[in-house]
Length: 133
View 1: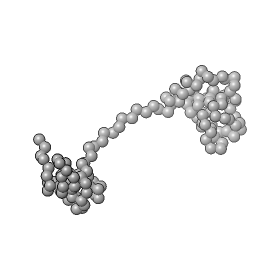
View 2: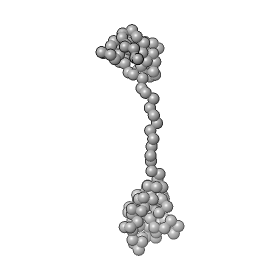
View 3: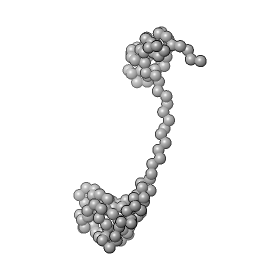
């Protein structure tokens, strides 16, 4: 059973000056809820701010970069024509969405140009940053 609050009663609240949850004295009421309180630590008066309940950590279900790259690769693979792939060379220049044939990683798709002499290429094994002109 919860006690009905009235002016002069002690209550816990978030203090705007102390920036902590401290004990306060109720100064004014708005029906059954404190409207204005005074902090017992700093004597600051402010609107009543109830102490926040402890937040539960959010459960994140993120897809790993490898998994998302693999899914993207599988979606793009049927559209790729390996005959149109350009052999990879560090001195070559490549456009976004062009096909690249790398001697180690195999067939890849240029995803984006990074800076002046780099590009990101999506291969079956994942995303790789490659040098280019």
